[in-house]
Image (cartoon, rainbow, N blue to C red; front, side, top):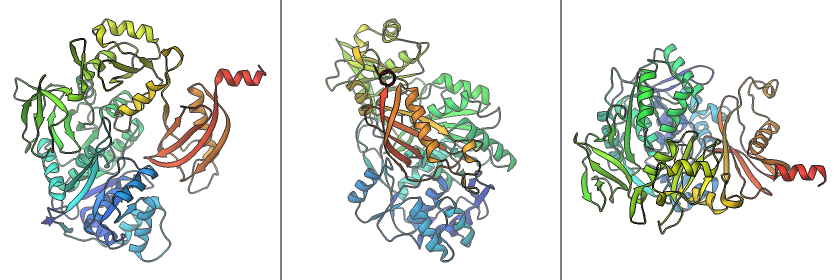
Length: 569
């Protein structure tokens, strides 16, 4: 056993928050004192189901749960029904969400009114005396239960001891040694995901790196962090993100040369061209992680200069012959990994794709990843994916976001690039793909999109349509609306959902229900979703960091039907 945060000096910054009225810099000893006070006030249970979306609240809550001897359960989603099922699976448990965190902080402070959920962490840090050294945790302590993303199957649970988490963080530290001095980590991926946990929270507390708890989602967010870090003379900034978000940051000019010292990417393959463009435009270094929930970081590469991956320090691969290529196994993996690899001349390995991605049609072979690459090289295609539409694996389907194309023109372009045996049936065109926060696509969702194609099979909108949105503080609705604590009025929220539907061809003709579950404040990214499988009943919701703030049901009609009704035809 050794104390947590042993890589820090007691007055060294552990957590940094730039958002809010004033920057908040939390030293290691201040955080240790707050965790000690909070741990004594948490509900007594064996498992703490962690549902906090705010990174600082989540970090303090997790450390406090470990101090209380509890195992943290990280849900794959924070939908109420999914959390309820976890409570049944882990009966000796409680849910630590923002409201429970605030109640526990109030109990820990012991006086005054209960703080608002958004202010609870600051109130705890202000009230708790510093403590040093921090508490110690036994290596064998069952620290956490994480779930896989579920992109290829149902999410699977994986338990990890404290020793396993520390070994993963040590592999991260050795793979990505500081380029100059200890960095400030700014991550875009929620710590409920293994990459977000290992490359943000665990890298921070194990390696002695400060963690920025403002999780940037938009180019403006990253620009704000860069500017604030410069004003605070903070440590060199490392951006920990996904290829999807890195592409958005790069397109949005979120950083200038020298603003970001290093970029670390994972969750889906990173295009070498994007890595090279970011390195050139930002004058930074871009590294990519190959890993999974079971094992964490397993291999790394610098895509701009190297195609192959090298095993991460402390990780050994053995390769088992497959009928088409080698398959990797690592010591901590309970089974063969899903990915197929080939040996590289430089001693590393090339990632060929998942075993389940292999496509065999008419005696010919390719992979879904290779087909995706062909699709995405077509001019006018902004996103797209191939997938197997049935378990026979005898045909492929595809969905693409390509506003300038019809299915016929897109098929003609594909026919110039791939064998006719692998042309998709059906090929659907959609306004957007239902990717999750890490940029992944669930096969089940893609199958839903093909289940009810549009007339003639030519074009189909996705069953679920989404939009990311930020209600800027300059919005006129905030003028005089709850002075001192502005929130978005309900009418404005409903109008934005109506606008989302209108942009996808649906006219709202009535509202069956609307529930406002939590306030939405200015300048906070939110996600709007609507399920248009049945236009007569369109469930919708608005979520902030996966916490549902608004939920309801609209009655809609396609625009043409709505216009006919208005004209009396």
